[in-house]
Amino acid sequence: MNKEKVWRDLLLALVRDQAGAGSIRGLAERVTAWDELIDQALQHRVLPMVVANLAEMGSAVPAMAVERIRRENDRIIVGNLANAAELIAVLQRFDQEGIQAMPFKGVALAASVYGDLHGRPGGDLDLLIHARDLERAMELIRERGYELETADKANAAEGSPWNFERHFVRPSDGMVLELRWQLDLFRNRFGRNLGLSWVWRGRRVVLLAGARIPAIGPEISFILLCMHGCKHLWSRLIWVCDVKKLIASTPDLNWENVMVEAQRQGLRRPVMLGSLLAERICAAAIPPEIRRACEADSTVRSIADHFTKNLVENPGVGPRGRIPLGMQLLDAQDRWKFFLSSDFWRSSSRDRELMGLPNWIRPLYFLLRPMRLLWDRSAR
Image 1: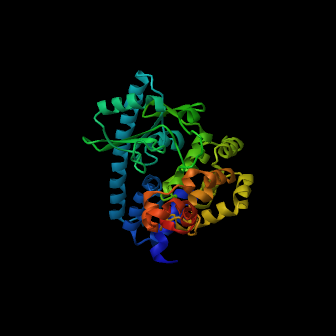
Image 2 (image 1 turned 180 degrees about the vertical axis):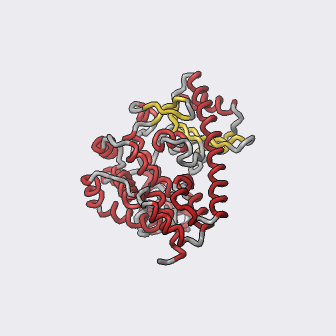
Image 3 (image 1 turned 90 degrees about the vertical axis):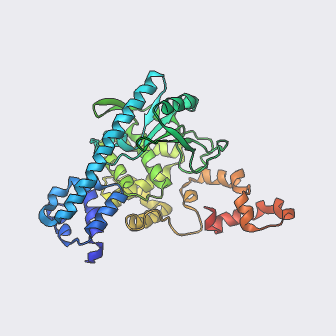
């Protein structure tokens, strides 16, 4: 076994939750690059899982590594407690003003899926609200010391039709809060509005640090986790672990409803990809019929092969090929809508700059743009 890669095998064994204590200890005894393992665990946001299995490694873990792991985990615990307190306070303030809000990801996911506030790092505070409540919600956020950093970071212009987010930072403590009124995988959702109305109808209530907060129902949450992982090229191991943990914590998960809703929203391929990755990387227990359906789609299977191989050591690297990942994940109906949409044919300033066409011929650019979108990776 390549000693340089033992840390990778140990990290995967820890997040799979299937290897016995003896196997984990055996891998730990062979690890020499403990700092690299810890760095990767932090980058992939899975350090709490390392801590949870630390006792099983026994004396195989050097004292210096144990000390660093515990120190880093203490920071996560303190951060999660601060995030939980702030999230509860914001939700209560919104409720006083009659503003419906749904937290997602972060400590809310830790409470609803992991069953442990400290089971995963918290990160930012993410809240989904109705678009009609945006202005009042922003006023309440500013009252708590937050400052608007930017609109949707990928589409900063407020006039953009794809501008679904407001990003706030509180200078006093660095707390980050994001308000969204629509969730999305990629831009071309063709009229679907995956907003608060979509997630609110199946909501449930969970306990977070002793407070009752709303949580997204498991079937919709499953779709959102797969959508989120695809949007960010599955660049963090924690996003695969989230899918696995949801499956493990919801033995009565209605897979039929998951697939029907995913099909309705044009998200069937992202859901199949997330399911395959959760099984392959984290040993999630998915039903045989779901596995067969996933494996039967050659595109999903090929993308899953790529991320299974590259996720840990080459995170954020999409599959090679001329067809952008976002287009591969669209269902057939949405692909045709994209080809027929103005987004596919309308040139941008960057397009015109790259092509270097003289002004008199630019009206004909729409004939060349489709070729560049498919052949020039810089367009993605």
